[in-house]
Structures are given as structure tokens and as C-alpha cells.
Image 1 (tube, rainbow, N blue to C red):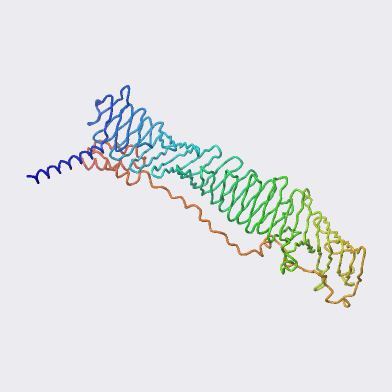
Image 2: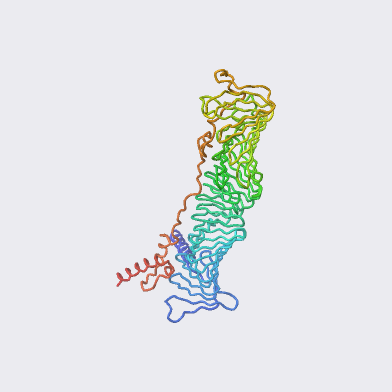
Length: 590
């Protein structure tokens, strides 16, 4: 008897639990001012109205639904809510609209008319919204807007909100408007808590004084910085920065670029290239390294400067280029090398500098000593100043300080060189060709003197206080020795072989760059870092995926003459499939 009572008790408990579970899954009416069955309505349908104080109130599995009027289809566990509708999930999600319908079987809600979905850090507004409570996702495809205090407003044609990860996914005509900038893209993944935005497809970010373009990118809307890849570029007023990967900090007004860098300055008619660059807009400066190349574009002949590192500083009216570590300069009629090059574009002064750390005992000191070539002339010294006319873009003069040495090859002899040395050298240019040279103090010369037929008369080796040389068509026309100390003109047969070089002679013609490509011939092999960048865009699963369609299918009424209300707001293509299936069932039922 006791065993029988125990079995009955267990069955009662099980029945009570089952009844409670079923009751929990049904839409429950918490309050209604009035309820009635409208004439001609479906069986099991009840209409509810509010009273003067409270709205109609339903509850289902943790969600509360409030409205002025509701139609409950009890058999289908489905409700239509009209006027001032509000759906509240927990204490974080609230959705309001003119109309909401909700299926207790599928846990799918559909909102229409002035839809507003509010969560703690953003507000979504649209005209039509699907809300899947099972997957905790919301979806619109008729244009929507998300307002977020710290990052501004985001609009798009299609959008989805993933509530567990607080992620928005925007597609088609996406526009993020912030007081500081406007972002436009095809696809945007936005994380609400962090403010992180992931950009896919052709995209622009336009702000005051800067415009960004990329086809893959990341932007932190809270901290105002980002990095961009795939055809990435930034336009700073009249300066454009291009690179395989670009980093940008709006607060600092700073940008850096990696791999295949090109910085174009349209105001100063210059281009800078390299492997890594930094641009400080407020300081009006560019730092670039790794096969760095600065190009000053001139109407007739551009100037190229290459070094390990380049710095361009100063406003457009007083631009300065600094090149250091194995610096080289090249134009069609001029070339040079030095440890460092300093070019002042306002004054037209270019300095080739030798650092003091390279002493005369250093075996590499000779190659580090600044050197220049103009046509067939080689000039070297401790420091070289090249002065250009900034208006005509023509070479004006040249100054070599300390240990000045001028060498030109005697083209008619096998191993003869015309040489002049002294403390200082001053050269003058006409039409970019050296035509007058003055060697000042402690001047020495070795000169192959020839007659009008090019026949060698003798070799002149002399010393004097200073020397003046007149050059015509790249040949020495006249040498004047001022305050001559000693020297004479000797026939080649009487000129000692060991005396045909002045002390310090160093012919470096093989180092002379004869093209832009030659500027890089001493560089180590190119090795660029691998940029992983952002992963390719992966289209999301369909909001109305197999799981949703399965739930909708399972929500079908047993009476085939009653339409499946849970399916009536499916997208057109999904609805067509549903209709075909319904026709098949009806046909087989007849």
C-alpha cells in the first residue's frame, strides 16, 4: 500500500512539473482591461484592450510585452500587439514599435513602425525589425540607424545585432558619422563595448584635414586610432601617404606606414619613398627609412636623394631634407655621396657632410668623405656646399671646405688624371656645367697640357698660393697659378711615374651613380616584413537559417486550413518555399 501511494505521489509531481513547464512556454496574460472574442475570428482567438491606467501585459520566458491592444491566438501561442508596443527582456533590452507580433513557439518577434531597440550603450531605430530570442539576434533589411554616444551614429541598409557579444554587423551603404569624421564603407563589424570597428571593402574616413581610404581596416572609435591595409592611403591636405599598411592616430595627428611607402607632397613638388614612414602633421615632418628615397620634382630635371634614413621637416615655405647614413644624391648632370646630406629648399643650399667619427686612420674614411661629380669632374673634401637658384632650378655654385680635391680623367691617356688640390675650392656653374674653379690656399696641380690637335705637350706639376681654372665643354681651357711657389712643365718621358699623383688622390668613378637604380646598388637585399593584416570578410550565416526555418516549420498549425502565422514575415524567397510546401500538404490532405 505504501509503495502504491509513493508511485501515485511521483506521478502527481511529474504531472505538476510537466503542466508547469507547458504553462511556462505559453504566452501568459498578466493584465488586460478588457478581453473578448471578435466576431468572425479564428477559433481560440481573444482580443485584449487596455484600461485607463495600465496597458495589456503578456509574459513569456523572461520577456514582458506591453501594448494598448492585443490579439492572442492561443492555439498557435502567437500574439499581435498594437499601439505603443513595448517588449522588455531582462533589464538590458527594450524594443518599442507601433506593432509587434511574437510567436511563443519559435521565440521570433517581428516589429513594424518606428521601431526602437535600446540596450545600455546604443539605440537602434528602423522601420522593420526581426528579433530572434533563441539566438539573441536582431535583424533589419530596410535601413536602420544606431546611435552610440561615444562613437556617433551608424546607418546602413542591412544590419544585425548579436546580443551575447554586443556586436553589430552592418552591410550596404554603411555610414558612421562622428563629430570628428565620417566613415563610409560597404561592410562594418562594430563591437559596442570596445568601440572597435572592422572595415571591409572600399572604405573612406573623412575628417578635418585628413582623408583615409582602404579596403580592409580597423578603427578604435573610443581611442581614435586605426590601421588600414589593401590600397591604403591617407591624404593630409596636400600630402598623400600610401603604403601596404598604415597606422593613424587622430588625437596625435600622426600616421605611420609600412612597406612600399610613397609620400607625395604636391605643394613642395616632392615624393618620398621607403619601407617605413612616420608623418607628424602638427610638426609638418616626415621620417622615412629602409631604402629611403626623396625626389624633388623639377620641370627639367628632378633631384633624387637616397640614404638609410630621411627626414623632411618644416612648413612648405621653408622645407628641409635631411639624409643620413650612406647618403647619395643624383640628377642627370650631377651626383654625390656623403655620410649625411642636408638640403634647405628655401635657400637652395645642399650640404654634404662627413661625420667626425670617421678619422683619417679609419680605413673607410676615404669612401665616407663627401664627394661630388659634375660631368667629368670629381670634387671631394671634408664638407661640400652646393648652392642652387631656387627660382630657375639651376646650379649656381659649389664650395668645398678643407682638403678640397678636384680630379678629371685625361681622356687621351691610359692612366692620366688632371688633379688640383688645396684647402678650399669654389666652383661656379653655368647651365648646370662647372666652368670656373678657384683653389684657395696651399694649391697644387698636375695637368696634362695638350695642343689644339690633342697632342701632349707636357705634364705640369706646380704649387702656388691659389689656382684659377677655366673649364669649357668639360675640358680645362686655362690654368692660372697665383703666387706660384715652384713647378714646371715636363715632357711625359721625363716625368716620373711615381710623381703623377698628388697626395690624397682617390679616383672614385666606380662609385658614381649614373641612374636612380645605382643609388641602391650598395644596399643590402630587400627584405620586407610580412603584414598579416585583417582576415578576409566572411559573410555571416543567414538570419533565417535552417534552425529558424525548422522552428517555423514546427510551429505550423495542425489544421492545414490555417496559415502559419510564424512564417508570414519571412523574406520573399523564404516565403515562396513555405507556400510551395503548404500547397503540397494541402493537396495531399485532399
